[in-house]
Image (cartoon, rainbow, N blue to C red; front, side, top):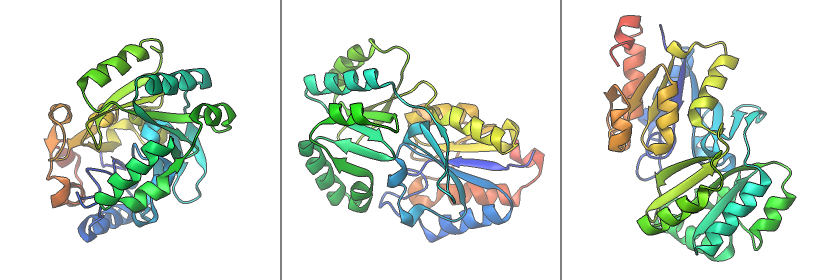
Length: 285
């Protein structure tokens, strides 16, 4: 079957290590859209972190906060939302604080941090040349519990910066109180991050729901991944492809590995899809 929907992460995949969308990748997205292929971003970023420089017209949908929220890219309409219950969100933020760990609570497409962590985070983004993303996607707050309590949108995701193995194990022990929530470990700026969400706040489930809403069969979908929070997406898609810079776990989950994000792996893949439109060629991925 021809590919009709492609799911792409942003960081470590669509963007190179300098956080740039190259002209080659941009052109590939445009070519896919002209061929009638839908492009969806599926990212751990909150919605406001999908900044204007990567809100490409070829992209039809944005699945943000690791599958918590799906929006129509053109209209901004919320099509699907899966949120952490308030009591769980309050307890998780309190547990992280008690362990001395920094956390970000994502609400309404923005990530909220306590002042000390916010300032440190902005400095990290500045050093890495990605301050535009930080300023667009993060907000400073003096009282996370009050923010959670007064939230009218729903907590999309909580990211705890666990830094190293001992801290990660301590937070994992706290999370046994909430076995119904989804917990994913990813590589953060300072080490390990623990990303916590609703059990259906999953890139793979969101991707399948999107495909169904568009009348696209699973066999007509393809997803590309690079990190642990992409595994659900890769398992859901009809075809799974890993970036050259992906973790070993992601590579093992895929039938194909393309070039890394500094060598336009996404553009390489889209070019092959467009060049080999037959079902037999697609099945070779």
